Amino acid sequence: MEKFKRLKNEGNDFVKMGEYEEAANKYSECMKLNTEECTVYTNRALCYLKLYKYEEAKWDCDRVLQIEDSNIKALYRRALAYKGLQVRKKNMAGI
Image (cartoon, rainbow, N blue to C red; front, side, top):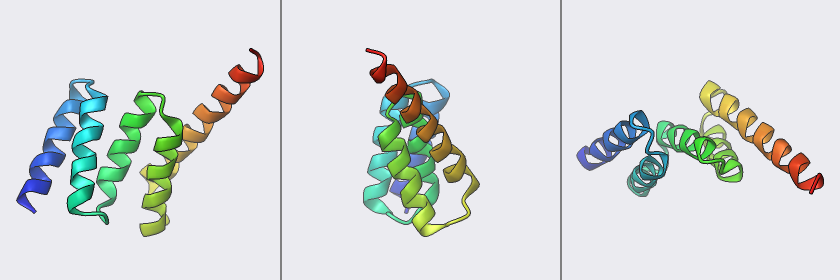
C-alpha cells in the first residue's frame, strides 16, 4: 500500500507540472497494485484528455463506472472524452 501511495503522489506531482504522459505512467503502475481504486482511473483519464487520447480516457471512465456507477468525475470526464471523439470524427469527415 505504501508503494501505491508513493506512485499516486508522484503521478499527482507530474499532473501539477503538466507532465501528463509521465503522470499517466505512474497511475498505470498504481493500477498494477490495486485495480479497484477509482481515483487512479479518473486521474489517468484526465491525463489522457490532456493528451487528446479520448478513447483511452473513455475506457478509464467506463472502468470506474463499473465499480462506482455514480462517480461524478468519471461521468464528467467520460462526457469530455465523448465530446473529443465527436470533434475528431467531424474533423476527419471534413478531410
